[in-house]
Structure formats: structure tokens, C-alpha cells
Amino acid sequence: MKVWEIQPREGLNALTLVEKPEPQPQPGQVLLKMRAASLNYRDLLTVKGAYSSKQQLPLIPLSDGVGKVIAVGDGVTRVKVGERVASSFMQTWVAGEFSAAKAKSALGGAIDGILAEYVSLHEDGVVHLPRHLSDVEAATLPCAAVTAWHALITTGNLKAGDTVLIQGTGGVSIFALQFSTMLGARVIAISSSDEKLERARQLGMAEGINYKRLPDWEEQVWQLTDSIGVDHVVEVGGAGTLNKSLRAVRMGGHISLIGVLTGLRSEISTASILQKNIRVQGIYVGSREMFEAMNRAITLHEMRPVIDRVFPFEQAREALAYMESGAHFGKICLQF
Image (cartoon, rainbow, N blue to C red):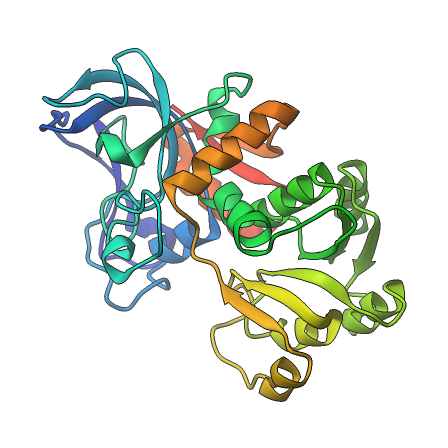
């Protein structure tokens, strides 16, 4: 079978297509013939060697994929041959609190991921999917969608009438927009592109701010909320935008710290966190239980993920280069 591996090379050339034997399901495992996958910014960092200095190579990348169960090992009861399932980002985080042990089961990082024609996973690490979604649409859910759900619903307790600030129009941000409008919340978005803001408006965004024209976008957010601030910030920028988010959020508001697009380290206004009683919550994807709860909501509302572009499996390197360009709106996917 064909497998993409990250090998000790520089840049996107580290991603190499190799031939390997087809895996066989061990007791408790299911064998999937992969149908589709989706990319996350984490995958780009991992391939380029910028995600973790302790990353072991070679590594099969990607965490998000959908496959058909073609065989099961002894003792499997959760799934059957012929069913369609998705991978769960952390294979052992089924429910309950997060832990260091569960972090060590993250696909495409701590352990091999799903960028292969056949993948064997434990039955506890796969999830049944909404029937109305295509394979490509369903492949977008395990990381970006669960992250947005965890941030706003599980931890953020989002409710109708709340105001949510999203940054950019990548996977997590667009899912946050869709979940927010689903629950009756008002969404303010920032982007460097008027065209992308208009597309976000068509998905339910209330107000958009072009941060290239208005680099002090946090002041505009303050004005749009009558000098109160937003209830929730989906913070995907990281070090370069967190202080602005602290200014944009209301007293007692909630910031979900998710991404590192603008860096890993910066001087942070801890006084703002204290004086405004702000809750800053790190969000590292979520559990299978969150994934399944999210799928019930997606099914009820017949929500469809936003797909920007689909590449064939053999063009995984080109798909990552497209992600690096920042031209996408929503998710970039691969079809097997």
C-alpha cells in the first residue's frame, strides 16, 4: 500500500511517498480503507519540522480521515465491517478530563497518523458519522470541528445572544462561525481579505473587520459591542494577537487559546486577565464524547462543513503548499 511519511529532510520535501505492507487488525482494532482526509495547520508545521523539537521520524502525518471498515480484530463490538467511520484525534481520550497519557495518543504527532491507503485503529478511537455528509465533508471533523465545539460549547457554554469573535477564515474559525450561528450567537470576524469576509457574511457573520486596513481591530470590536466587548474569542493567532483579544473581550469573558499562527511567545498583559476577570482556556482538540455530541448537533441541523479545495491522495505535498499560501477559506481535503 502507499503511505506518506515525514522523513528527515527540509521543507515540504520531507513528505515522501513510500510502499509498505498492508496492516492487519490486532485484537480490539479495526482496519480502514481510507476514503478522504483533511489538513490542519498542525500538519504543515509537523511536515516542516516546526511542530515539536522532539518529534520522532519517520512519521505518518495527519489526524483527520474517513474510511470504510474492511476487517475487525477479535473482541471488536463498537463497529462492523462495511461501516463508515472517522478517526478520533486522540485515540485514548474517550471521555473525562484531559491528561498527559491521552496526549500521547494524538494521531499524526505522538503516533502515526492516517495518510495511508489502509489504517488500523483501536475501536475506541473511531467515530460514526452524520449520514448526510460526504466522505470529504466528514473528514474535516476530527480536529478543527471538535476544537471549535470544545471551545464554544463544551467549555465556553455558548448561548443565544452571545457575541463571538473569530480570527481568520481557516478550519477552526469557520466551524466556530457555523456553530455560533447554529446557536443564535452574533459573530464578528477579522480577516485580511474583504472577499473572505463577504463569504463569511453569507454563512451568518454579523460584522467583519479587515485587519490590514484596521490593524487596531480590537478597538473596532470594542465599538461594535458598545464598549462592552465580546463574550467569546476563538484565539487562533497566538502570541501576536492575544493581547488584542484581551482588549476585545468583555469583563468576565472567555478566550479559547487554540492556534499559534503568529508565534509561540510574547509579553502578555496579565493585568488585563486579572482586572477584567477573563478566563483564558487552552483548547487541545477534544474527546470522542465531544465528537459524538457535536455529530448529533450537525445531524439535527444538517450542517455541512465548508470545503475550499480537494486534492487527490497523490498530491498531499501540493495540498500542504496550498495551505501554506493562506489562500484557503475553510478546509483543504484529500480524496483517496
